[in-house]
Structure formats: structure tokens, C-alpha cells
Length: 308
Ligand code: PMV
Image 1 (spheres, protein in one colour):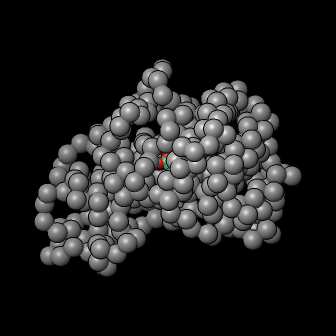
Image 2 (cartoon, rainbow, N blue to C red; image 1 turned 90 degrees about the horizontal axis):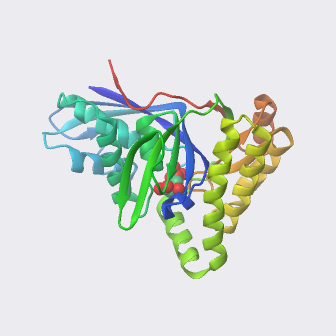
């Protein structure tokens, strides 16, 4: 039994979304596939399930599997630790493969809820943006109040996130990866500490939320110049929250002369940036010349799915 799920790019609003502010993401055309079949002992890619790199898979099994041992195989096009949602994709695809083994329907809402719990268990503080995007595919808007196009709502402590379908124009985006991998949990905890002690940081979080709504409106109007300007401002605010990195700034600066805008994406502290551009080839070249890895990715409507 096998299932796959896409990676994601957060277009606007990472970190602020953990506080309940609006954010916008899209699934991308890089996917993770998980194969699962009953076996005499637990194995992932022929290795032990206890290896740290399988912590999301292990937690998903602990939460969702009551049967005997399985042999799992993971095949992924999504670079890990790069802010492109590899852990959400592997979590969602694992949960879907387990349901498939039990001959249960793939109900996206219940997979998204379960995947969020897995990510929350492993990561500490989290929002459901990554796991819901990997589940639903396409463009996603997260807001603190429900609106048209509601997919589902997820609550945690006093925070509540409403996840909505938004159709974005087809976007070719250039991702630049620093090659520096940074764990999401400590970065998210660092922002919380900063917001708790600084009014400026709390204001930056609110401004990022407003940018997410304005950025979505600009994308929907195909006003890429305005969307790019908002991306640039979002990047400054993420740096103010302490999740930037000199290597990210270098790739952002290299991309900007040929782009509408560029910003870090995901947790930061390394990881990746992306650029919105009409000249993807030139931007990819500039990112590579600045020492990054460059990938052209597209927004993709396909969420979690069973594989034949
Ligand atoms: O880089 P990633 O895929 O771990 O993105 C995390 C996004 C955050 O907003 C920083 C955290 C979250 O759970 O929303």
C-alpha cells in the first residue's frame, strides 16, 4: 500500500501563523511517497525506525497504527530541513498509507488533524499550515476566523486556525536552498520568547499577518509587483524576529535584481528562500552563483493521494 503527499512553500506569514495570524501557502510539485506492507520486523528503508530522521514516521505510527510490524519505504523529492515541508509530507503520506492498509477511506480532514498532532508532538509549538497544505494541495489561506472556502478548523490551547482553499494563479517560483539545515522547533520557540518580551516583535507578528492578507489579494489580482514588494517586507520582518541567516540574505540579494520579490520561506535559520519572478532561469543562475542550490517549482493542486 502506498500514498504520496506534496511539499509546500509558505508564501507569506510563517512564524506569525503559529500565533494565529493569517498566512498563505501553496503545495508544490515535489512529492514524498510512502510504501507500507506487513513484515516480520519494523523497518524503514531497511533501517531502524528509531533513527532520528524517522521521528515523524515513528510518531505517526504510534498515533495511528494498531497492527503488527511493517516494512516502510520512503521516496522523496523534497529536500529535508530546507523549509519545503518534507516532514509534513512524510507524515501525511505515512498516515494515508496506514489508512490504505486498513482499507479505510482517505478523509483529508481527519488526516490533516492527525498529521498536525504528530507534528506538534515532535516539534513542540506548531501551526497546522504545513500539514494541512500537504493534505489538501493547492493554495491555502489560514486565518483566525472562518471565511468562504473553509476546508477545516483546528484548535490548540487558546489558538484556532481556519484553513481555506484559495485558488492562486499558476506560479513558477525559484527556490534557493542555503544547504544549512535548521530544526523548526527551536526557531519557533525563539520567536515566542522574543514576542513575550518585546513589543516590537509582537508588532512585527501582526504586520506579517496583514502582509499575508494583502499578499494574497495581490496574487489573486496577478499584481506580481505588489506581491513582490510585500514579500520583501515580510523578509525584513522575519529577520527582525531572529529567524534570518546571512546565507539567506545573500541568496535573496542575488535573486532580487531579476525578481518581483524574494523572501525566506518556512522556519528560516538557514533552509530556503524563494523568488517570484518572470525570469526563472536568470534567478536560478544568480542563486547558484551566490552559492545556493536552485530549484524551479510550481504551485500544484494535488494533495495527499493513494498510489496504485
Ligand atoms: O520550515 P518548516 O516547513 O518547518 O515551516 C515551519 C513554518 C512555521 O510557521 C515556522 C512553523 C509552523 O508550524 O507553522
